[in-house]
Length: 115
Length: 112
Image (tube, rainbow over all chains, first blue to last red; front, top):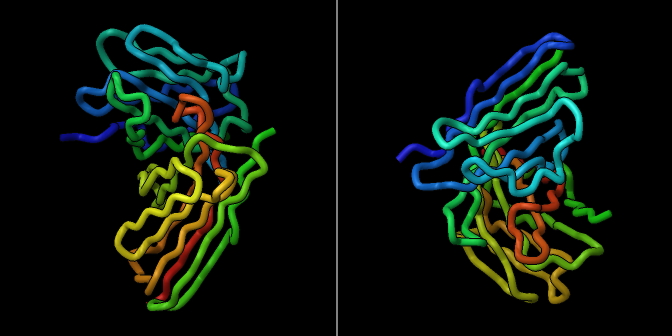
C-alpha cells in the first residue's frame, strides 16, 4: 500500500527554466493538496485539487505557477520561468474523498533548487 | 494575519529527560494538529485536537489544546533518541482541515 509518491526528490533548474513536480496520491485518494516549505519555516498551502478540478488555488502565486490533476496520471505542479525565490521543498498531500477531516498523508517532497 | 508561534525553536536534551514544547496564537482554531517531520521526509500526523481543554496521549507524548482553542502544548516524558525530529503544529479554521496555518516548528534532538 504505497504512500503518496512525489518525484523527482531533487530538482535543479537554472533561472528561467521550467520545473515540473509530480505527485501520485495514495490509492483510493482523490483529493490532492500542494504545500511549499521554506527552510526554517512551516508549510504554506498552495492549491487543492480533485480529479480534473481545481477546488482552491488561493495560496498559489498568480503568475508562473499552475497545477493540474488529470483524470489519468499524477498531479503536476508547474513553475514556469523559475527564479531563485522559488527554491524550496514542495510537498504534496492526499486524503480520502468524503471525509472532510480525514488526515492528510504527505509525500516526501521535491526539493527545488534554482541556480 | 493569523500566526502560529512555536517555542522553543530548538531544544537539545539528554535521553530520559522530560520536555514541553508550545504552540501559541492569538487566533481561535477549530482544530489543531501536531506533526513530526524527519529530515528529507514529509510531515507525519501525530494527533488532532478539537475541543478546548482536550488532552490526548500517544504513548509518552501528551498533547493539550488550550481552553480557548488558541494554543497547544506537547509534553514528552522520558524522551528517547527516536523522538528526535522537527515537531510542527498546524491550526485549522472552519470546516477545512487543509488550509492550515503552520508554525515554524521545534527542532528536537535527544542525545543518548
